[in-house]
Image 1 (cartoon, rainbow, N blue to C red):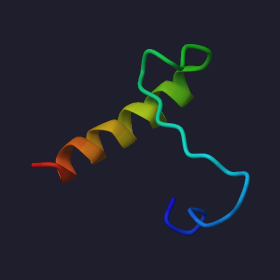
Image 2 (tube, helix red, strand yellow):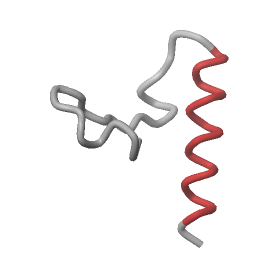
Image 3 (cartoon, rainbow, N blue to C red):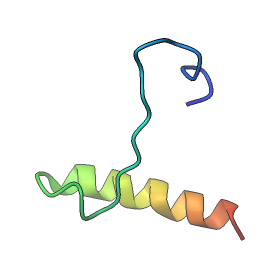
Length: 42
């Protein structure tokens, strides 16, 4: 995200497991990122 923060016309969106319901692999990726972010805040 830091690499793209200064690129115009790009916006970062944060999703959680409730936002992604189409494919289990995508849900697993979102869950992994969420666990990682929660671990950084401890």
